[in-house]
Every structure is written in C-alpha cells, then in structure tokens.
Length: 471
Image (spheres, rainbow, N blue to C red):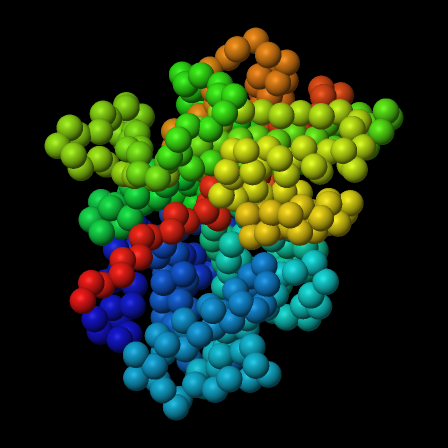
C-alpha cells in the first residue's frame, strides 16, 4: 500500500465508501454529519485512523485540528491515539510527529486532539477545524455531545462522524442515525452507513467463522450479539427474555426428587427475607450439569433452523444445564434455614452452590462455607456483576443448553415460569443490563436463583482423572 495515497483506496469496499464520503465533505467544507455502524472487529477503528492520517498528511502545513473523543480517555481514547501513531510510523513519519500534553498528535502544523467524553470531562475550548469524530457514540451521553462537542465543529463547519454499534433506541448513535436517514430521504445524500457482520464476512471468511461461533455461544437474540454483530438494539422486545428464549428453556425431562447415580449437580441460592413479614422467598435451584458436551442448535442466515449433522461432528458444543428441582421457603428463620440448605447440598452432592452474598447474604454464605467448604461460591450483586450474570443467563437460555423440568403444576413450577415471563430489563449505557421483575407483578427470586445456577455451572470444572504410573 502506498503510505499516503493508498490509505483510503486500499481499504475494504465498505470502508472505502465511508472514507470517500467523509473526505469529500471535509474537502468541500460541507459540514455533513455521518453515522457509521460497522459490526465489531469489522474495521471502524482502522477506518478512523486512516482518515486521521490522510488528513494530517493533506493539511500538514496548516494549523488545523481534528477532534476525536471516546466515552473514556483511558483506555478508549488512548487506544485510538496509539493506533494513529502506529499508522504514522508505518507511513514513514516516525520522528516527524510529536505528542503534546499527552493527548495530542501533531504532524508539523496539523493536529489530532484526543478527548474524553465522560460526563465530568472538561473539554470546552477545543475547536474541530477539519473533522469531529465520536468513537463508541452509543455510550456518549446526548447531553454531553450537544453541549460540549457539537459546538466544536461550528467555527469551520467541520464534518462530524459518529462511529459505533447500536445499543438502545434512545442513545446518541441511534438518535442521530434516524435523523440521517430522514435527511437522506429528503436530499438523497448518504449519511448513514450500516454494515453488519454478514456484510463484513463477505470480505473475510475467517471473520464469518468467528462470528458464527459467537452466534452459537451466545444465541442470536443475545443483547451482545444483536448489538455488536447484527447491529440491532439490544432489546428485542419488552421483556428480559424473548419468546424464543422462553420456548427454548422448556424441557421435557421430569422433576427429580433425588440425584441420579453418577450425575453431577450444581445449585443456585437466592436468599429472601426472614420472619412472617418477609415478602420474598429463599429459592434454591438444583440443576444437573452434563459432563459431556451437548450439540447446539444453529440458525442459518435467514433464521432457518439447521439440524446438527449426523456424522458425529455437531456444529457447536457446550455443557448442558438441566434444572431438576426447586426448593422454596418463605419467612423461615435463617437459624432453621441454613441447616436445611446444608443437608440438601450434601444429599444432592452439589459440586458448586452459587449463593447471593450481598448484604445479609454475606454472613449467611460465610456460615454455609464453614460446613460446605469450596462448594460454596459467594456472589455479590453489584451493577457490573449482575449485568454479567444476566448476560450469562441469556446466553444459556438462547443457545438451548438451559432447560427447566417439564411442567408439573406445582407451586414452584408455576411461580418460576410466571417470573420468567414477567422478567424485564433496563439496558444501560456502556453495555450493561439490569434484569428484574416489576414489584407490581411479583418477585424475582426464581429468576435470580436460575441465574445463580448458571453461574455455578460455569464455575464448575470436572476433575480430570489422575493416573498413577505402574512400575
């Protein structure tokens, strides 16, 4: 690749289309705003660095700025800065450019200024003469962009580019993207560019293989897959689970009252309140974990179900989790509850028991650990850890490896299924999720216990047999 003229021309076709549109707007002083959605690892950061390097080279003798902001300075803005420096080095500019104040790359007179778009970041006073770029725009607050960054482009009518993958319908990227589509319909000028994983895969077979593996691992309705690869908002409907995920969790195995010989079991324990006034329940979910891998179902590009091959090579594998029993207690004093949990854990031979260790759950888990040792996996709910827990639950539900016992009309079965159907989700900035049941519709004890049993299954690794060499 020619280090200067080839920076744009040698990109992939979809990157080339975007790059040429942005450069035309910059050179013509048109001040257009573009939204760019490219599936994860599809080359949006490569494109951004190429545009910056090309413009630095083109306007090297003029004191003009490019502004590049990201949701955080470290690591996101700094990663972009290092990428630009690496590209300039490859172009033969090593030693010619300077780093100023730790966040500015200057090539003679032209500069790229890297800034944080965190709500508290002080950025007022900077001017974007050529280009204003927003990386991971879905995670930048609209208020911050409108107040502090958009005005930077005003003095020179600079072109603006928002990069990212959609997360919520109301985020900055999605909001500006919808506006761009309206403008396109009015004047025919393309402003919104969208290339999902299938578009990227047309030019990269290895990428196709990787993403198809992610679809198997997560399920195509998983928020991460929807957002980062399919370029769809994370929420597919009003609830936490899609209808398809709820259906996929329906099992045809009977509820068990005791363990099967040779089977491996784990548990998930969500503590409720204590005493007669307690409104929620303590729920213990028991699940059998398959020692062998189970075939995963795969959906074709058009959504059709592909049957795993019969030649012994399934399209994907993962450990199965079969819920076989529920225990629930309401208002029981913890002094009586803990011995019951210890007896159940020992009776089922649970390999791992993931238990809510938040608040009062901390000392309760510590007490259980005294009796059960390493089998107890304390889990402290924070915003981040609960989000991870929810995503893992969705992955297990959406890939067909989590199954509930078939309906038996028991109170536990009915309440569990009702809670799953009523589970809701709030998708937060920075790709986090909070899942819960609206108190007006009931509790979420069974949902949390189910999420914890998935956590226990993920933490459990069968011990490999160790042989003693014979002399």
